[in-house]
Image (cartoon, rainbow, N blue to C red):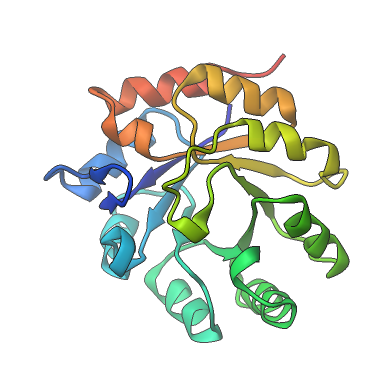
Length: 218
């Protein structure tokens, strides 16, 4: 199963997640375990990240890198591309219609792929109404407006599965604690999963990734 593993310095819910580990070495280990791509959280205030993380890791891995941050301007897109990332996150609930459509089109024009992230049926309806064609449509199982401190789980992906557009690649994000959750996301219609905290907190992150990849497909 395609797995996007995540590098995140800290979170409001789980505290220090890197625990002194070298991000580049950790990224290399994740790649060797078979991930399809790498998500790097660069939001500084709430998650302790920075674009330097992208720059440092980019020279060590060849897999696609998603810059995960609160994208709000075309300047964010420019600096994302300059840092060496391949894709950018656009969070539907944090952007008005005009900004969402403009940033989506600008990212594509600059050669970046887009992960358009939803959390509700209303978010999905906005994506459809704006006729966006994201490279990946994300379903965040937790609520980013409260910094993902809520108790959301894979049931969010399951509940929204009936409203997914046909032919769209879907990524189930967050609240995935292991193979059973990944299997539920897959069965609900997700084509891939993005997993951060459970991998970073695992005694053996490589083993945790391998278990997710092994979920496979029916």
